[in-house]
Image 1 (tube, one colour):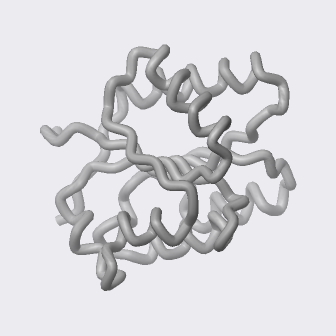
Image 2 (tube, rainbow, N blue to C red):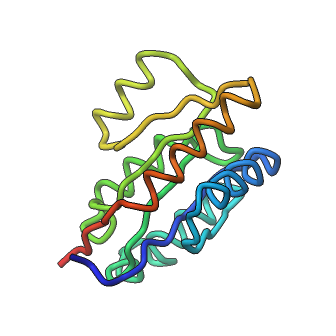
Length: 146
């Protein structure tokens, strides 16, 4: 069992969505640290380090919340890099996006996404989905890379 608390890394460019996600995770009783990034470049630099080696994340237990539609790159690009890196590949990735295209959903799972959640435009449904996600986060364990 891992003794490291799981930190949540959120890569979401829509500030309103980011606040809503965080508020509902907190409402579900999850107190884990949430580190937010508004674009893919900053998020990847945090996850893989400036040199791209991923060494900085070797000892982190992370859960990544990832939007697919970012201003500087796609979330799929980030997913591919995270899952290809030996230090980050075991970190669960939850896709949180407005894209509900079936091919895109299959592609993300094929690339290693653990969960794919479509952001409903309906506030109540979205809040409910995020709260359920929060409950999931409160009990999950993330393996540390060796």
